[in-house]
Amino acid sequence: MAKSERTGVVLVAAGRSLRAGAGGPKQYRTLGGQPVIYRAMEAFSRHADVFAVQPVVNPDDSAMFTAAVAGLRHEPPTNGGATRQASVLAGLEALAKHKPDIVLIHDAARPFVSQALISRAIEAASRTGAAIPAIPVTDTIKLTGEAGNIEGTPDRARLRIAQTPQSFRFDVILEAHRRAAKEGRSDFTDDAAIAEWAGLTVATFEGDVANMKLTTPEDFVREEARLAAQLGDIRTGTGYDVHAFGEGDHVMICGVRVPHTKGFLAHSDGDVGLHALVDAILGALADGDIGSHFPPSDVKWKGASSDQFLKYAIDRVSQRGGRVANLEVTLICERPKIGPLRDTMRARIAEISGVDISRVAVKATTSERLGFTGREEGIAATASATIRLPWGA
Image 1 (spheres, rainbow, N blue to C red):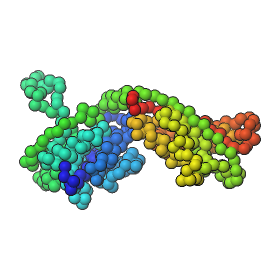
Image 2: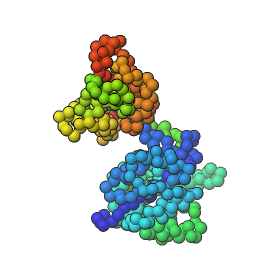
Image 3: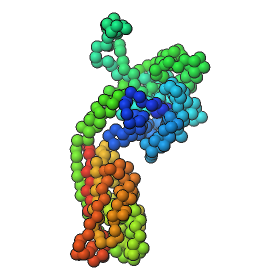
Image 4: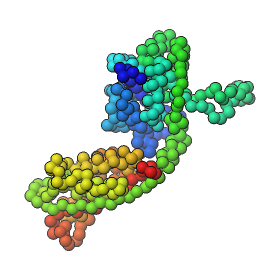
């Protein structure tokens, strides 16, 4: 592809998903711990050759959309129409001000699009002007009549299953969509069909069998099982941290500012809960400890907020294709009292780490007035983390 060509994406996510069963629009349901739409958008947002991702959503889903794709690069969403075809046109019109050379049109219900497939789509559009990913049909296909009787057997060697992202020169597919709308044609099932109707020759390029569309409840069950099988390397790590009290009027515990008659003596903010958690995650990864990644001798960590340490550890899990299954912290102190703040701390850890609060536990105990914690000279914390990684990661 020529370096001067700019690639935009229309991500179609305005459907109501009636065939997918209960649970709301399928693009906002979780799959493998992440919203479907997040998985679908992430590959495009992170692709080096994509400069703009234009989501098309139902206006009733604005809050769900914002929460589901937090942290991903994208254009402000535009409202979809009554049909997929109308939604695509709305996305193309919203993207037009950016003047892309190439556009990829992708269904949010296909959450397993790969970087390699995106690259093939861009190259194919640059070379041919209109192309779709396709995979061969492996089963024998039958044509049936109204009574259900077989009327023919097509040659499966010539049959292909069409996928998205479908890729086009931007100006030609925009014009084809505008013309179809003007002429009252709203019966096209995909963008390639509109391109064919407009007189374009549509090429095919290698699709991806993993890039299947989620349609029925059974699809979700199957893909959850597949993802779980891929993350079969289950690991657990433990962590421990302690900090002494010094002068101050508050302490940071599990990301929460807690009023107290003393503060922590520490190089960073002294958050024993988060420090123990970081060590637990790094231990599960067999990736050193918090001191090896954030040495106390480095002045840039002086007074640093510990939430960035936890985010870093979580990112190390993500970089290896894994996800967090459970995080647990036990705080050992006489004061301050942890009980009233337990759920606030759980929520803060969940927010920092990007996991559901149901996967975060915060507990507290005393040492029965024994030792340094019993004498209220400091606080100790233990932690455990369970993560799932692909085998060999």
